[in-house]
Length: 426
Image (tube, rainbow, N blue to C red):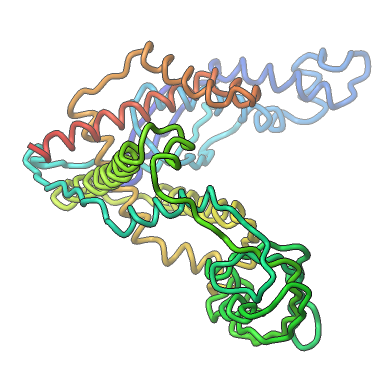
């Protein structure tokens, strides 16, 4: 097998592969077996007719064309390995010469992995900023804990802000009940702002057993487009009014949450909030470091297949987010008034940034000669399998060679990012 490599600009490389007639023979024999299973040849069992008989029946060119799949499956990976090229996406293949008795020649076109000149990335400096705990958020967190231990007591009076009421309701648009706009025995804490603006305010002053009709207006940015900005009629019946009593923030309350004292509880909550801030600061710092290295680096042009792959990933991520929230992707597109091609086009700048960030991390890992041991990969795979202990099919996928390769890349990238942060923080 003869392989000729040709580089076209910095994004594309061609591999021309030539196989001599004697090198093609094994692939032709496999093709003949497949064809003879599909074509009835008198005197021979399916799959056992000799080459010449199959040739007479279907023509020799048919055999050659049938062999191409095996030829490419076997010889193309060998050609790539021989020439040690890094590519992205799938290559396109064109057959240059395919004729009985002659060499078989084909050309594979690859999109090259862009190269990165990191410059003096070790000298990039970024300051890490950690915020202090917001006292308002601290107070809100403590208040939320108290709400988890509230006591509700029925009262014979009109509902007030802060009360918990149980209601039946029906919301109508133009006299027709809207989908999902009905509820029975629905709990509502007046003032929590979980309902449409104006709804909770209208319930204030109502007593148990009382029915009231009023109007609400859906927000302009409401997810269901046909309801956004629309005024609807509501019929609500209060079935129960309860006064909500928050427990005192004292040692007795802290002990209910398995803390020795309220002081220990406060210290733990503050420590948790501080940890969240530190994690956020570290993520912000990491992003800033990678962007700073990107700004001073030089990149080869990004090939189209690589851009398309990244846009595909972004689209899948968005679709997953919408569906995880119980929405439909088509409804989302209608809400943002964009088509899929328009979304992809608007993302190109961000996709470029994501690609360059990944290329920087990859280049740093190579320059720092970061290697991941098999023991480290095994430990990480086992950790992930333990997380999916109730999903045997997922665990089985994690045992494959490809998944180990994926984990190797993840761990290598993590070490590369850690190294960049060490340089930037010195």
